[in-house]
Length: 306
Length: 68
Image (spheres, each protein chain N blue to C red):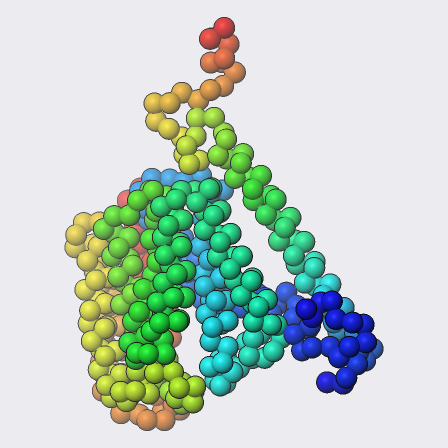
């Protein structure tokens, strides 16, 4: 082990990991989205939870998302090393051993599921365990390198935290959290494919079968439009079904019109060079704001109704 | 990288090991506080899952006195 190396032996590269490298392994930027959507689901859920237990639930959801990200990086260190965007991650950069990363990720996964189960409830713990296993086993190991629809499946993994957040408050899951799940699930393909369009060269180099690499730019643009057309009605469904008020419904309709307009612009684009893909970059950036505003409106709506 | 530790490499290694140990200590301390907080909330009388139970009287000093 690197920590017990003889004083005069050559220092391995992996002896130089510090806490920042372990933190980077958790993909903190992805954790932000997960925490935000889960927290919104907790506020929107009927009933209440003690603030300290609510904090514990959010903490466990964030740590579990980070652990899943760490397991993903452990498994994908070989392809991460090939892409400019990911080559500096701790494992491909050789800052820690794969064993250290795997141990760290497993400890966080087991710890977060156990703590949310003991502190909050076991329904939330069950869905948290499902979210980790889905991301690691179904997405990372099974489908990511096999199908260009990998992003669609990965979207489900990113959507589970709303179910966990809801279950933490209510102890069960109903129609609204599954609609929120569907919103994130359908939002993921347009969001990531817009990114993949202008990062296509990077994915191609790593041999990841992203849609623009396998089916071309035109087909990807059509699929972005198709998923956007599915997404917008689903975002409006909670208001139509009477599960939310029209504060949320009005926001969903307005944002949906803008999102569709941007998706149509992408579908009409014929740019082939990343530098010319203005519409794609705009959609990618707007999609982040779109999801944040939708969930923000959901919370505002619930607080207004209350 | 050279075959043996240079003073600069040793200093870098020790600084990073110290930062790792410090971070681990802080995480363990935070876990202690977390478990303490969870225990207090979960064991509070009249609360289930940290939520007040409707129709379940909270056991307090007055109810103890009445039962005497």
